[in-house]
Image 1 (cartoon, rainbow, N blue to C red):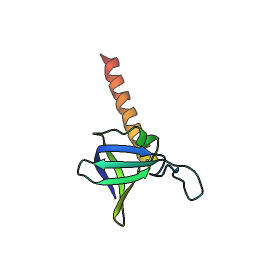
Image 2 (cartoon, rainbow, N blue to C red):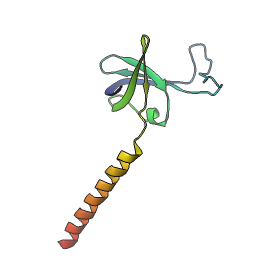
Image 3 (cartoon, helix red, strand yellow):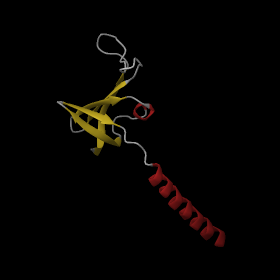
Image 4 (tube, rainbow, N blue to C red):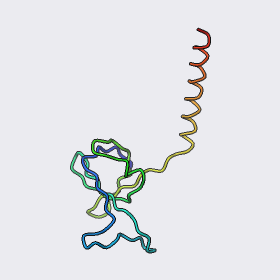
Length: 104
């Protein structure tokens, strides 16, 4: 379920407590990202360019998944179609404003 969370703390790990790299099932290395929310929940997920840019105090939409006693998260996929609609609306508003300025 997607929800908006506020980050209290965020940490990225490439290795476990023994110093071994985190590996996918097919042997590729990955980064683990652990987020603590303002309400005290701790959740983990895959590190990415998106999570690397997050910092304390940021509010983000994440897909939060209960997995047994643990919480995991996924970064929601971007809906290209809704972005295209938003861009079109913004382009139309820019054109309207440009016309107003040109009439002055």
